[in-house]
Image (cartoon, rainbow, N blue to C red):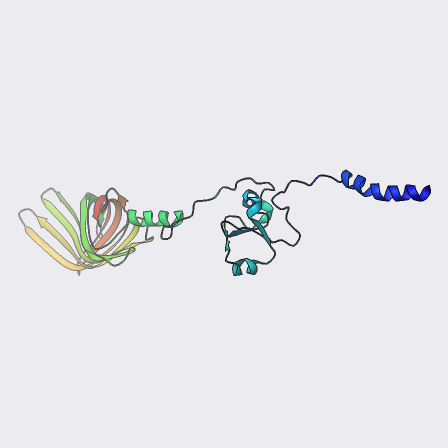
Amino acid sequence: MRSFALILFASVAPSVIASQEPAPRPVLVDDVPQGTNWVANARTRIYYRVGCPITASIPAADKLYYKSESSLESAGFTKSDECDANLSQWPSAAVPVPQTPPIAEGTPSPEQAAKKSAQAKHRRSGFWFNGGLGYGSLGCDDCSRREGALSGGLALGGTVSQKVLLGVGSNGWAKSEGGTELTVGTLLAVIRFYTSGTGGFFLLGGLGVGSIRAEVSGFGSDTETGYGALVGLGYDIRVGNNVSLTPFWNGFAASTTSADANVGQLGLGVTIH
């Protein structure tokens, strides 16, 4: 009787135990056979790294599992770059991953586009011209005080680079009072140096000829020529493709064998690039 019971238990127990086993879990993104490193789509011939959410959308009939990437490449599959390599950042379920639209070949990046826009805004090339007018304060070694009057300048030349402009320039100051007229001027070779290829700020320097002329009504006039020099700075504010408003400060001087004069200029000019 005991043997019969044992035999009956042995035949029934497996089916009872099997009926008590949990139902298979639904397949998740990473629920793949042990040793699997890659999941491929047999229909599209594209494969993905294990953990990529896109693999959850592959039909079961088309889903293939691979351990070696070289096997996939040998079979003619193409690797997808749509999933980030950092698996810890991937969602555990099949949630669509937002994709950044690919940048077409030859299309500049946002940084390159911004730099190109700045360069276009301050593009300097070819012939350039500048004319300005403002207030000038004149002083000299023998002067008891400085004299203010209208002052201005002109310059033109060619562009060496986005930072360097070369040319010739003339600056002048003149005042007439009580029948006496005094004029100070320079004719110089100038260099205009921009501190940035995409900016408007510049430094100015020049060397050449300077002159001082005095005229007294009823007594005639006298002009002396000597050395001239210029230092200055300014800023181009673009108001058109090739036109800038240029506020500036210049200091220029003329020195002869018997006289000298220096002028500080503050004014506004127009620069054509």
